Image 1 (cartoon, protein in one colour):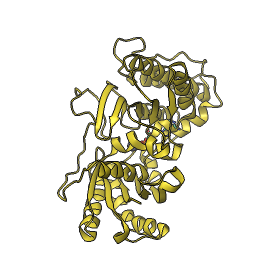
Image 2 (cartoon, rainbow, N blue to C red):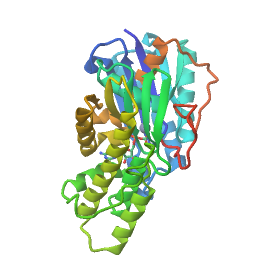
Image 3 (tube, helix red, strand yellow):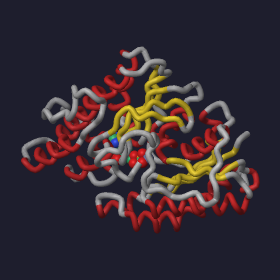
Image 4 (cartoon, helix red, strand yellow):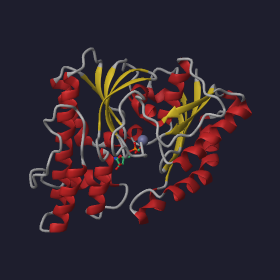
Length: 349
Ligand code: KG4
Ligand code: ZN
């Protein structure tokens, strides 16, 4: 057994999980987990308010960890390591989780793993599917990021493409806001889109056909805004047509990135938007056509959670990584430090 406590607090979810990274199935790997969502607290503002988030993390984190340990029937002394998100994310929240992890690591004399939240997403498919081997091509789509990565191993990522403006989750959230669907928007847009006609409105597909695999969603978002403000369209048709445009962009960009890769074991999707069934379906078809396996974690492991942080911590522990008790919280922290910075990279992950 290798028992890792994971802590996640980089955005609007306070989460704790205990993972046995030596277990051979997903069911046995996650021994216990708790997620406290702050959706209600942020809903009146239509988005995450950093100060409200940080305060909520402070209130919830200790009881959440206690409950997770109790559910697993474990005590601090039983754990092999403590892992926490150390960035990127809203800095107040990240500090709450990281400081808590440091206190536990010090009190229990356990190794500390300061985990990159994006690495948590990037490795979550391996938590879900024990047969997924490196290297794989990953589409990481969340509220703050939209990237294609070659995942070569733990701590070894090559960015193939990224968004030059908005993240994909952000585009979903803004569309939801325009349609009055509230926050968080992705699941609401997906649900409304089921009742709509995806061909009703021909929204733009920014960068489709361009020579690099980068993404852009700002023009799509503006087009949705103009359509909503212009009136006369059925909201479900707007949602469905927006979602289809976004999917078309993702498929075109991913196909181009795949064309430049060889030796991949799978096409993989992770991050909050990976919970979207239509997106998963389209990528699965692309994987089929490309002769690749398709791997997507179950939806609950796509959106922010602590099991993925514990799992990434376990992979790092096994690879020999340890972090000092003065490890810093980072608002920004690219997975591929060698990749060129781009305009518009958000702080949410
Ligand atoms: O990974 P995540 O939980 O948090 C970040 O690290 O950002 O991703 C949250 C994002 C939000 O933008 C949310 O609207 C989007 O993922 N999302 C979805 C769906 N579920 C969550 N987008 C589209 N369809 C969904 N079903
Ligand atoms: Zn995330």
